[in-house]
Image (cartoon, rainbow, N blue to C red; front, side, top):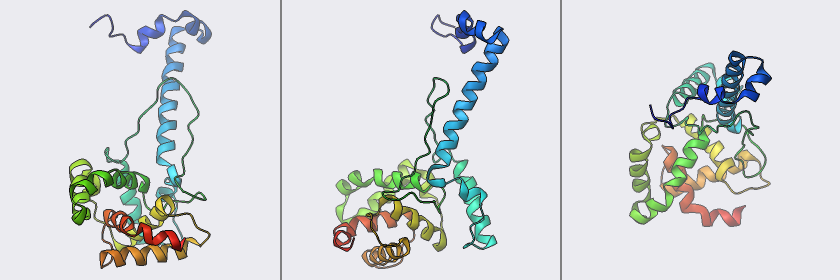
Length: 222
């Protein structure tokens, strides 16, 4: 043990004012530990509930059947337990205020796909590098980068219903703000993305790449 290797208990022992305020060293230890746990839990909760993501685990959305709801809840749990998906950078320094973020470019929305904001960020982060590798095979380049850097997304097998849910979140997060209803915007995005691919999209990366290829087409529409 080096001189610089000091535990948080020893650090607290060198702060008589904090101990005096607590009434005893034991109470000071409890307050410090309790405050740390509260802070970590608050930050984790703020991350998990981004875009009202937490409601996907607890609520039964009326439009989904019981079987679909169970599958979505299982997907939520599997992603939550995956460290490459649910990875939170914890800030130290006691209790602070942590805002719950909503990624919508316009009005806040309620997510339909678990942790969609994570996957959206992952795919978008590959764009510049993928375009440098193979412009004529952009999707292949994106999938190759994802397989190397994010195995959770690479191995994700999604149903058509789950992909539609991701498209909903994707349009809110990445789509062009518009006065059109979300249903109308979803129909437009779905049609143009599928047209650019020449078929229905079958993965999250295809939704993103499909949008990249039609960005100039979308501008005059919205």
